[in-house]
Image (cartoon, rainbow, N blue to C red; front, side):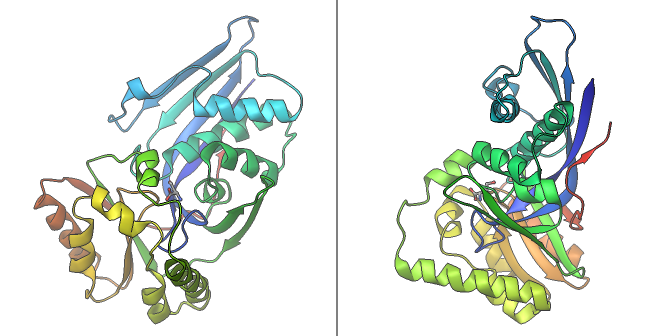
Length: 309
Ligand code: HSE
């Protein structure tokens, strides 16, 4: 028996919501998990890279693969060990660009394996396992649920989460540069302790953001899309980020420019029709630094992971 699951890309943080806000985007990876019939064949992991840019050397295809590790945790949670499994990963989501590619394959593997096992885990249990593997829940939650999601990984490993409405007329423009930034590196530059005034700054912005989204308040959203917890530290790792933010700061209809997850992709949140102008500004700023980019305006994907066969 085999199960294939299609999982959307995700963008996390949205500025002040470090490690707790995320939304799903319509770019997809597919994970297929198959119980192989012959005992003793062990684990086989195949990656089909539709992005043509994956560094295969850095991706383990044995028991250290994160998809396998997630599946192993699921089996262990019901007192079993995975034995003969063939895992096939089809990737369309650009890797190490802050678009939730690892979250998507973890979620895909877990949902497929859960189906093969007769669905022992519910949504909350799957979220908890996926967050344990990822270390934070803000990508895996919208990957499972779709849409705009708030989530919190609690000390006992459970995840508190709610799906919220994203205003339909607020555009998300994803700006993907041609360089990579590993999440581990982007997390390592954030200090382990931060000044209380910066914590208060982000508390206020997160509260503003939720209210702005709920009431579609664009002025409040402009204030909300600021952050002092992670972006100021990460900015030095992302050539062009400062210039792009400054160039778009006074552009009509732009509500804010934030890092997508740990970066290096940037997210421009806007309303109205000046999307081509926004795209040109971003692409020109990066070209000045010899950085090529893909810039896509995408709707929020309201569906999370789906079983396709
Ligand atoms: N919240 C995480 C971070 C997302 O910013 O490090 C990583 O994709």
